[in-house]
Amino acid sequence: MTNVDGVQRTLKVALGERSYPIHIGTGLLGKPELLTPYLAGQQVMVVTNESIAPLYLDKFCAGLSASLDVRTVVLPDGEQYKTIEHVSRIWDALLEAGFNRRCTLVALGGGVIGDMVGYAAAAYQRGVAFIQVPTTLLSQVDSSVGGKTGVNHPLGKNMIGAFWQPKVVLVDIDSLKSLPRRELSAGMAEVIKYGLIRDEAFLSWLEATMPALLDVEPEVVAEAIARSCQIKAEIVAEDETEQGVRALLNLGHTFGHAIEAHQGYGNWLHGEAVGAGMAMAATLSNRLGWIDDAALARSLAVIESAELPLAAPANMSSDDFLARMRLDKKNIDTRLRLVLLNALGDACVSDAVPVDVLRTLLDDYPRR
Ligand code: NAD
Ligand code: GLY
Image 1 (cartoon, rainbow, N blue to C red):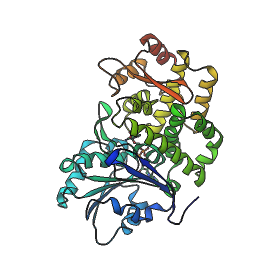
Image 2 (image 1 turned 90 degrees about the horizontal axis):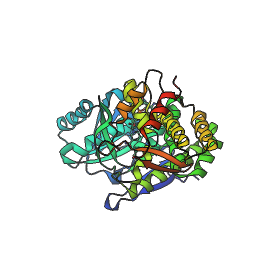
Image 3 (image 1 turned 180 degrees about the vertical axis):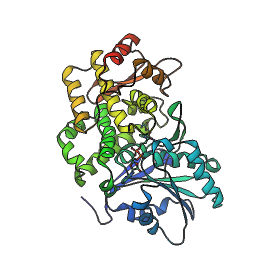
Image 4 (image 1 turned 90 degrees about the vertical axis):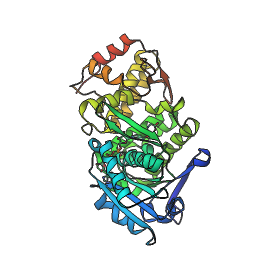
């Protein structure tokens, strides 16, 4: 399957003149020729964090042409640093380097770095080019694709941001070899999400291949990433700014974002919160009579097989959940909108869940 340059698959996010490729393969961090066509000029700012820098920064920068003016920014590692203050550090570095509108920002890291660098690029001099080089499973299957960028606010997850598409996404599967198992599981939550919302056959395949996926067997991981990115690319092409179908990508996220914010950013990983959140959404769908017991059991089993939590945190009351969920970006006016399942592989957005049903779910949902 692998061709000479290490690229196993190239997908496209079709957005007219803002379309871009997603290259997926092995050894791609050492293939700067895949990025060069997308650089806006000679000025390149590579942004990463303190954990990823020792692993990949030198290798990545060494591959870039000596004729480029390459600078680097190394931010602290953690969701708690996904703040406007840390985006400001990127702007400081750009201005100190005298970088102009023809500069290109490169996000080398997971979703935290990708979201921050994308937002820095969206606002710097009213918008400059940026490239995603995602190094976690979660960022490779989700956050690097689709142009959602931004930072957290103490009162809510991802509340400040912009839609700003990258010029290219470079997914090097080899980078997953250094990823801690807990982070791999967190990324698997978003992979499972695609099966649950859009593709029952993919869900069945995930059920069968989960042990190989968690062992990072290259062929199956490449397949999972490619199918995930393909589904995301289709949805983003249809609805870039989330006026409709894109909201389905938030299965489990309304509950999950509430968990993340309430626990303090970084304590529950985003993917762990999404895993429990999807379990809650599936349970609610079952209580509403939309999916049967067998479908609920399959949903819970596949989440659990990825070593993700099903239970909600013990320190969160129903009121804690409801207060956080009322701040969700999907809500319209005061109406809570939830992504739920009609069937495995078929999700919908509903603003008609009776409050008493939601409260009962929250009251008796398992905690740990
Ligand atoms: P992350 O960026 O915090 O990375 C997880 C951890 O893995 C970090 O400690 C990081 O330093 C480390 N790491 C990264 N790559 C590594 C590697 N190759 N080897 C070893 N360690 C490595 O977390 P994440 O799960 O990648 O992303 C979560 C973030 O993504 C959240 O902020 C979430 O809101 C956001 N997100 C955004 C979108 C979007 O559409 N923009 C979608 C989903 C999630
Ligand atoms: N992760 C949700 C989205 O990109 O829309």
